[in-house]
Image (cartoon, rainbow over all chains, first blue to last red; front, side, top):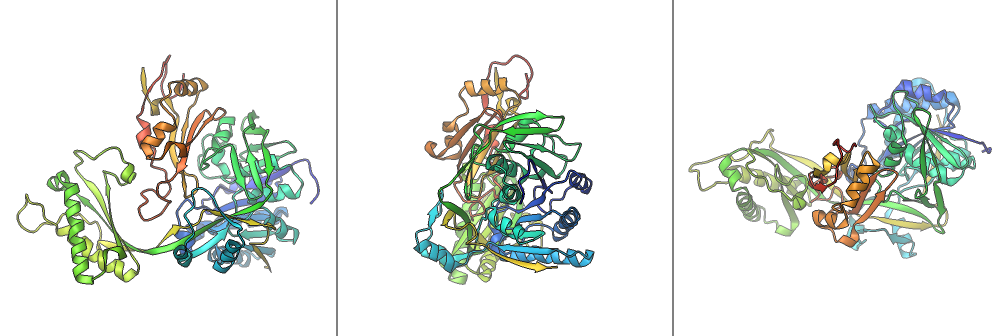
Length: 458
Length: 114
């Protein structure tokens, strides 16, 4: 790509499917961006999506956003890049997103070259890299054991900008990629144009949240970055929103453990010396951002193991006499449940887990809660069972909620019902349960070696 | 005069920084209040260590001048979404900080403005 003095990058919104104003987007296209990007994933909603192979987002919402983005990109003749497809960026998540793109192309009579970049790493590949000593722990890392390897459901690598760059070089107009470092989606095209890495990576870090860096975000919306040789400018295309130096700098705090050193696959973005100043009513210029290239290229990996199947029952406790002795009441319930499970199913205690959450007491903070509920007229209780199979979880939970419901207190004579269940059935399955099992990196020779690119002419 | 932290700060929040780390942000809207709160020495790694049951050396504290913010990051006691986790997004762990008493010398005005 040719050297230019400014590269303009448009982030459609902060998360694909969270929507953006179509008017804002069309206004932004008139500013002649070089690329349209959007982050489509996150580990924020937990391990379930990677494990189960499904996306968190509404299919219709994703389709709506993609339709506007793809039409806009094709009209302007600029690439459209989507990363961490389908929330978790694994192969099924990628395929889910690609099907939406194919539908859009068919329904709107659009013809373009589509690239898909897979980021899933199979177990054999992971083991091979481990045996070669190329897998290193981050902090804190769950140890990789024979058991966790056996239970590993799915692993993805977070790609840098290089796979996107390759796809664009090969003529792709729309790129749907698996799990990516959020910044790589937005850093790819500026790097192709030879822009300096400091401003490029810092701009990319801000763009990944769309309009998240404005002073008062009225709704999720688009963001533009103007990257120049030794600084960049951010300004929301929506005239009703504005960036200020504080709103932009505060944004480096959001979801980052260290706001000054942000690790990427090929190096570290250093914002220690970055300075922020207002430029115009709604824009901010950032200068002084630096990038240190690493000696070894490292790909962070995410992986989940399946730990069982869960059933829950949710209800309220309103009887003041039960509330006054709640801890001992729940202890008694637990003991009775375990006895009945043992005698009815024979399942040993170490083959299932039983947990109660008491909202109004310690539901949100668990053991860390410094306060004790006092004089609460009601608490919410969640009974939870984790077992190796769906059938065991159902069997144990049926015993559990029924036992809890009719557990007596000494003050009342006669049969009682101690929990207000809002639903019939009182308990529901929440399906398979996964746990993040990896916090590691793989040292690679080639930034592309873990990722495969396929092309399709639509 | 003692202020509660929520009266001095414009934002107190907790959030995951990835599934293995929790990060706490305390943002102020004036350099003056920011510096006064730091100076009174109540907010520090030791306090975070006590509230969250994390060894003090594992708490990473940052003073962010440009953002007028304090940040504390530490490994989550339980990985996000694990069986005993109580807060998948990590967004409701800052409660115990909100009403902390800060012995600040104030001129006039509350809510972090002067």
